[in-house]
Length: 382
Ligand SMILES: *Cc1c(COP(=O)(O)O)cnc(C)c1O
View 1 (cartoon, protein in one colour):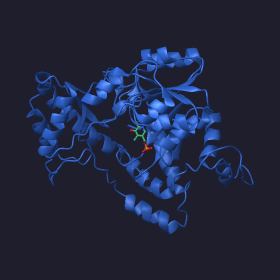
View 2 (cartoon, rainbow, N blue to C red):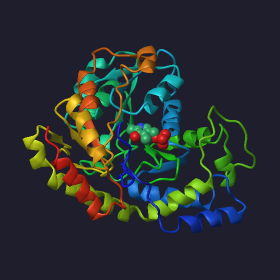
View 3 (tube, protein in one colour):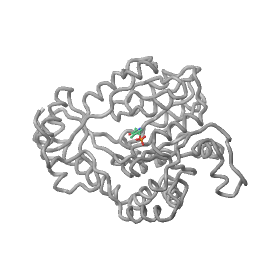
View 4 (cartoon, rainbow, N blue to C red):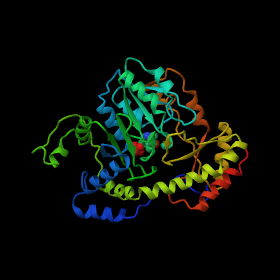
């Protein structure tokens, strides 16, 4: 194995937002460092504006927002939730923690998102919800999924970890289903080191979510002066982030337009420079279907085979460019085999996983760095 070049362009580099150090200093000096302080309120307001969500709650992670989601849906042993095979393990673990069963279904191979036809086939009388992940911030095919939810009285959880700002038919991702979640992990478009958010439209779900986020107490209502003491009201956990995380997030959200413009600059260069080379080499570029705005969270290529993909990753590493693969399918993972059910083998997810490679994309990438990635890629002959 050759060693990694010191000038290697990483896949991602966390954004440094103007004002984040000042915000952190302000929190530490204020004497209010725990959650629900000034920056929790400010970041939440900005997030509601960006997403148009009627309700938003900051959480300690997207994984915890998904856990809050499965608590709100009152999932129990015996219940089934449809989960795409090609996604991060968080939604599956949120279902399994309630003792419910994940039913894994295949993806649409043009986008990597859940295939509505596969979801339809997997519905039984035990199905309670469908989890949708918008891969790369490109909307899943929501039309038929909303019809299924309506017809079978199912909830939809949108795992929108790949960024606020995406839309489907003009509707913001994360606000189309019953529950939306976001991640502010430092590999995501907007970050708080670690963090997340829950997006809701329903007022009653919001009341309960606020209690569940605060260890099952009505502390938030107490802080607003709506009750004169607070106590244990419901099950829940400690999902409220500290105001230090919110202080970083608030600075990041202030720079949201700049972050997105720069990510789109990189994404658009790849989308312009790579398809001609791709066509000559049987390499498929990332597809964004009509009526969707994406978040430029990632740019991926689909190589003709796993062997060619692995050769490409080595070629790029030798040129000083990190181009890792992505999710390992959940249906054939050790925990998926133990805790899930897979009515039809997810062959498209397996193929997607075997052939995908992702190119570096982050707001601070210089035009020279983007050109280096393009030059290295287009020098590769499959
Ligand atoms: C990153 C990610 C998560 C987990 O987010 P955390 O904030 O780290 O918990 C969940 N789902 C998807 C699709 C992700 O990309």
